Image 1 (spheres, rainbow, N blue to C red):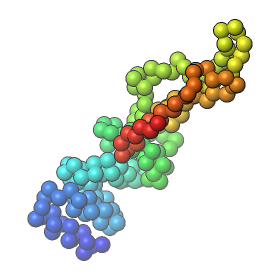
Image 2: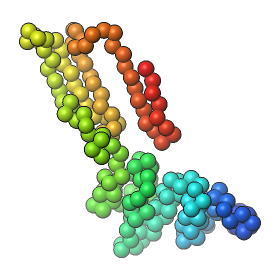
Image 3: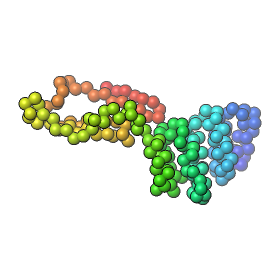
Image 4: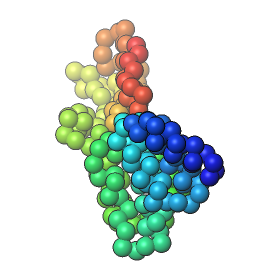
Length: 186
């Protein structure tokens, strides 16, 4: 690992803007337990716009690993800004963060970077619930359970009944938003 770190250092000396080399140097320093050097390399990689989310998680994990040994450390200082919601699931399940799972500050950080919490995502929350659906004559024609799913990012309608409450044909549109983009299918 020392030889690899040396090779990446030589590349960086020739190409200081090589984000991949900085990240690979960070990985080498991590394996060599040179945590301060690893943080510095991941930071430089992120500054070069090379995989900034992965670098942010690496930096946070390293800081939290040190925080497990230092009670005065702040486990979320590098997560409070940027695109934290995009890496929330990685952060919440990373073994490096398990020491903080009951920490109130860590829980606040996870909540702060949770997706779909802003008002524009809550515009249809009035519809959420378990509904008994009646026809104009008052006859029950079915039940409609409308629920939040996918960490509150998706409203799903679960209809059960003999007659659909809307004219046929019924079409379904699915919209999925992931880290790699948004897809629409019908």
